[in-house]
Amino acid sequence: MMTPSTLEELIEALRCLPGVGPKSAQRMAFHLLQRDQPGARRLASALGLALERIRHCEKCNSFAEEAICTLCRSPRRDPTQLCVVETPGDLLMMEQAQCFQGLYFVLMGTLSPLDGVGPKEIHLDRLIRRAADGVVREVILATNFTVEGDATAHYVGELLREQGLKVSRIARGLPVGGELEHVDSGTLAQAVLERREV
Amino acid sequence: MMTPSTLEELIEALRCLPGVGPKSAQRMAFHLLQRDQPGARRLASALGLALERIRHCEKCNSFAEEAICTLCRSPRRDPTQLCVVETPGDLLMMEQAQCFQGLYFVLMGTLSPLDGVGPKEIHLDRLIRRAADGVVREVILATNFTVEGDATAHYVGELLREQGLKVSRIARGLPVGGELEHVDSGTLAQAVLERREV
Image (cartoon, rainbow over all chains, first blue to last red):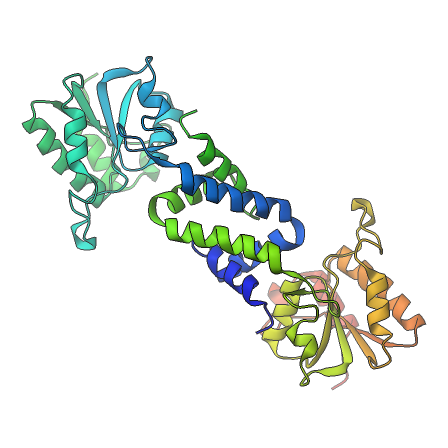
């Protein structure tokens, strides 16, 4: 009513961002128009460029500007180890932890039959082909420890073992610096179950 | 490093939004590219359109697509009352409260000498001219009860009174449903100072 329609449309459009409700969207729109028009211009063009140029790496399925991404092309990575993660964000977390020198495959989702997401939707055939390149020896499943992530790891693990590949799953347990008193009982139970001899 | 440069630029550009840090910007960028490319397209075009079309209403200084906004053109509003607010968001709040039938003037900021924002920067000359149209009889100052908002109200009030206009300030006090136990002492002190006979 009091808002011009292009401004209303901008507020509505900002709500496609995760975690942005009507109030924040309004605040963002006002901020951009009132205080940061260069920022708004930059955001519009960054969105346009990203939509135009970003595609999926043919090898790891993560976001890339070229057919094969820089990580997959790097000669410094160990091609015998393949780590399977759910999202490009998870890949970044792994890289930031600096604990893995191999290559990745990004599922871009998890199996979720109730939502109609089956093996086809997350391109599991591509993962199987990728893992069966004759160079990969071990596949490390680093999907989340959620119901969907676990189910996906289980399903993917079965398929890959059939191909004669070594398959492992990242460990569950207490976080570094974690105290027994503050950890949930499910995590504690898993930590006991998956205890290691020292 | 592992992120394509257009994706990095999108993450960087998203940080111009208020309240968006590096982590949220990354989550937003991944969300848009992975799950909501139509939303990203819509946002890019909404930003473009808003930047192109939105300007300031010549009468009230709020955002508008036309020279004079719909509110200022409405024959149902009382042109003898002019309410001064800091931002278009404040104007919307006033409208949602449905407590005011007059017209508005939006300062698009407050006086803040330390940040180099003086009377010129917030176009106080335009407000003075607007209020001196011969129709406005009362100016209601509805700037925030912050140091800057109070200083602005004080300064604007002086100028308008010199023009022979009636000037008022919205009331400070306890919020509706407010309990003495939970209100800050400054607000309580003001509520006592500005008490009304009943």
